[in-house]
Length: 75
Image (cartoon, rainbow, N blue to C red; front, side, top):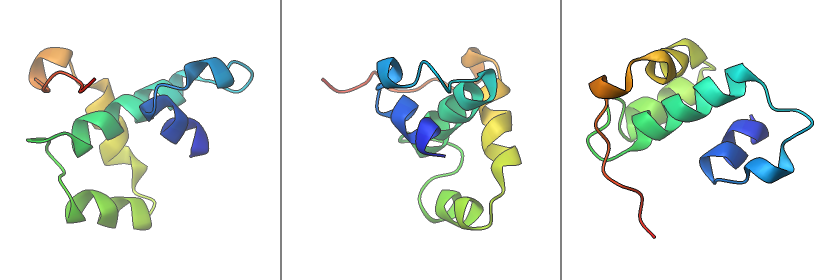
């Protein structure tokens, strides 16, 4: 999951050898879940991660962008 963490931190250039589509989906799901107003804020997201329940996170990453209006990233 270090690859997903690196993607969330915008460190794509360091991942060229190991990056897969599944990593991209999970990273997008993590960003959506952790965002202010996300569907799995705080303790819910942490509980899923502790239990290795990645299906919910992956589903968020597969959802249409229109379903998840996120605030713009901070500079």
